[in-house]
Length: 593
Ligand SMILES: Nc1nc2c(ncn2[C@@H]2O[C@H](COP(=O)(O)OP(=O)(O)OP(=O)(O)O)[C@@H](O)[C@H]2O)c(=O)[nH]1
Image (cartoon, rainbow, N blue to C red):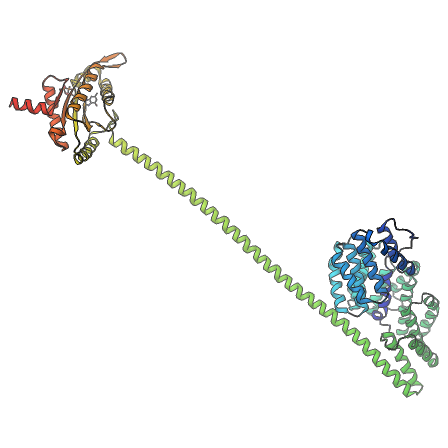
């Protein structure tokens, strides 16, 4: 088994890529006149001139109190980077979380998240790394800074590659191609694509994607990434059983690998050399190369390169009949293989757990949003119900007001009709029927308090002649004129009604017999003295009066009427235009009798 498991083997390379991303040519930073610019310069030197970077970091720390809040957070991010570079992953993680949670700077938080991804993955904390990667994905649309966006896409592509989600890894690498920031090239996206295709076993030594990635990285002056791609190619040669080609390629790239002294490449090249020798049947050189690779590693190192290396050793020793050495190599091989498998299953499980968690979160979110929708609907319904009840109340009020108004008008008309039905149409005073009932009621009350009243019966004299001479209209005017004169001599408490054609009745309340007679006479005189003048026709007329008082005739209306009528009759009979009282009538009547 000679395949180079790129996920595992490319990871340290990718870490290096992440660290070197955004590396710009260094500036000669001497004094700090502009904090933000100084910090940018310092950041740009991280991988190109690390000692200078450390020196500038120390320099800016002395100026820290004068920095703005944003600059202080930038400094904190650089401190986290340096702390991670020095190998203190735990402390770096704490600092990165501070920047992510409290800096309030989206670009800086995105950069810190990308670095945290590297931190977590390098420590094989895959579940947390995948969770963060998912979180970072949600930020992407909002990240506008091209450098930060490029870095996030790169980290996401790497994380998905680690999770065996090679299609997605390629998708993010393609997105990087469309968003190459100034100072960057297509080398990184293309090498990530090639790495993902390799992991997906979709790459052969003649795949154009691989050759393109190699050409791009060589042209871009990116030796580490170019060497990574060369090592992928030599691994494919070995897989395709072309060891001579693999050996030739390794010989060709070895000077560059030595120059860059990048440990993963040194180890990988050494192991591949051992594999190539073994395939070429050169057991001696294969053993030497494989032992050299073991010598390059620490006693507790577990990785896939060592697994392949011990496999070579095992095969060589077995072929040579060195069974004890073969057994020892095999035991190492098993340990490395187990470690490798553990790592694969850890990654797979972590990714599955994260996706499961996401699914649960999505379900919870869906259910929450459904609940929210229901609540919103209920609120809308409640609002509608309130509006409807308000409408009903308003309608009810309108109906009530209308009914009240209608009842009021009805009552008013009823009152008017009642009033009209109580009044005489021509003169506006009480009609006969109403006068009788009102007079009876008043007399009843007076009787209770032993008050006195007088009933006056009035009849116009020779009224037929007025009608006949001047016409009926003038006759009406005379009737109205008579009413006007009478009213001038009455109090509001007195009752006044028209009892017949030219006959009127007056009930003088709280009035003695003398007072009644006097009032009747005053009215008589006023009628006599006030002719009617209608359109030049002056009509003089008079009236006869019969007065009956409770003092002599009692409180019964019928009797009072009878007595008053009798007195009136007597007034008519004795010459008209005069006032006769019941007392006079009784006296004269008795004389006549
Ligand atoms: N213009 C007018 N005339 C009316 C009205 N009601 C009754 N009369 C008239 O009043 C007259 C009453 O006449 P009589 O009963 O003969 O009485 P008189 O002519 O006044 O004679 P004495 O009562 O005896 O003085 C009639 O001619 C009726 O037509 C009315 O509302 N308007």
